[in-house]
Image 1 (cartoon, rainbow, N blue to C red):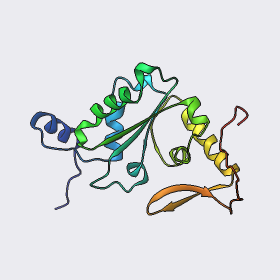
Image 2: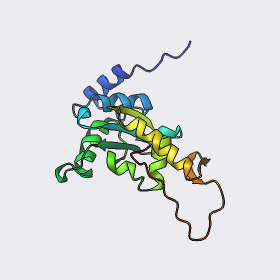
Image 3: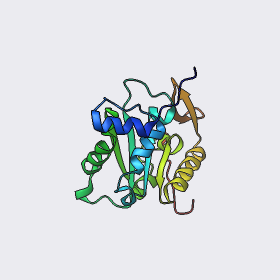
Image 4: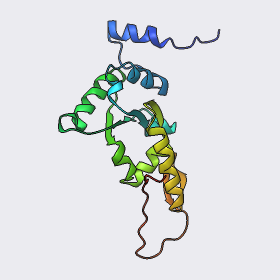
Length: 177
């Protein structure tokens, strides 16, 4: 007898009614849960990163979510978005990491991690500005002689040539890009 596919709707209904423990964590289930939230439209984009995006999610993995907003007023800081995302993903019984960026902040590519975010993610929701911005970030990284590599199942960007002593590597998206 062939096993039947897991009926997520039935499992979620039973979970809510009988508290059967955590719902299995899949890319699709997390995406679906995030898209159900009434606050989705308040964001520019919602992105899944980390092991869930890389395909090596395990029993000890957390769920990493990036929220991109137009502006970050003080009353809507990281804690504000963390509570929203954590409440939305609570049924998975996993730790949640939430990073909040503005569109302008992403253009400055504040860390190497931003390049990984741009290249290795699952786009859950986008009003249309973030996916093209991610493409520009990757293009800027390549212009700076950075190359994408994978070590132990994790993507990294590194200089594709020997560095010169004291050299500063800048990756930034300009309005001309």
